[in-house]
Structure formats: structure tokens, C-alpha cells
Length: 81
Image 1 (cartoon, rainbow, N blue to C red):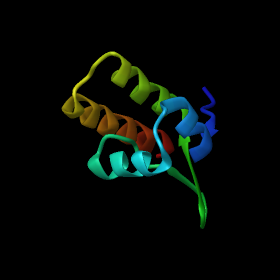
Image 2: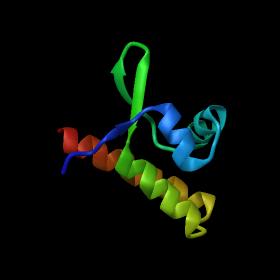
Image 3: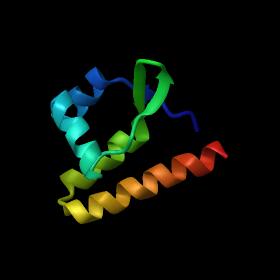
Image 4: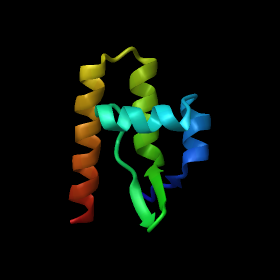
């Protein structure tokens, strides 16, 4: 399945969070790390963004979301290998 890559403007619209909040949550382990597209360009897989949004909507705790982020990143790495 092809996974669309979303840039930060799309992420802020889909999540309702500001750019700074996205990067803060990433540092806190509450948002997946982006995919590097170039020296100054990153994006996130749409499926990962949707999974995080779904977790927030369903009321998951921060600890559950941290575990989800680890799973998403691990799955991304295993697909690349």
C-alpha cells in the first residue's frame, strides 16, 4: 500500500496543532519522527498521522500514545529493511 507523505502545513491542518506543538510532541515521544526528503525537507506518512489523531480522539493516554509512536516508527523501519 502506498503511503502519502504529508508536509507540516497539512499536518497542522489535520491535527489542529501548531508547528511548534508538533515538534514539541515529537521531542516528548508523542508524535513520530518525520521522514527526511532532503537536507531541509521532511514529511510524515499519512497513516501515522491518522493513527495518532485516532488515538487522541479515542482518549488514549500519553503513555499509550508513546507506545503507539514507538510501534509506528518500528514498523516504518522494518518496512524499509
